[in-house]
Length: 233
Image 1 (tube, rainbow, N blue to C red):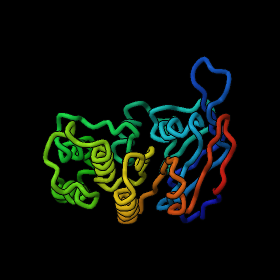
Image 2: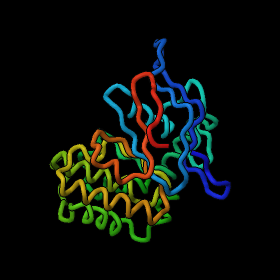
Image 3: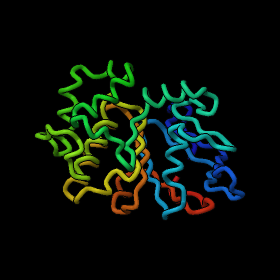
């Protein structure tokens, strides 16, 4: 998909290839993939196709052996480690598959960690605690006060989502973010995700096995082992 010259790119992948050290076979091969700022992408594929690995590449946690990844016009491979860490904190909201909550903190405290890591995000939020409480309420967790270790899996997943959404990141990376949610909370989550993205003109890059969610996205991309290409870009 070609971008208009007047539209800022959220994501551009060119001839990406990645394999694990010692492996002679490429886990991922993505010849080309582009989405504009504010557009949303649904990534699907069977287990072993490299979906989570692709998100780690997009966040700069991993680097490709060949090709390039540009987020918001920046080539992650050209940055030093500290620069990638700063870019990730300032511009990305990441919903990890394993949540990565600090269980001895309350949900609010976990959410505010995102702002503590990024003064740039914090500057976008007038009242951090109130904003965190509002996000939790919109996701159905308005009265949770206990430490996060006492939460159910589904509740932890919603706290992790709120942590990724606060501070209006330009790109939201979501790795199976609805896997532990029932249908009612899944609908509420998707609604809040898209509302938050719209308020910041943010792009969503969303990995899921749930094909019922695909219709919410204007673009889709299918990964298979050894990388067969997309079905919707």
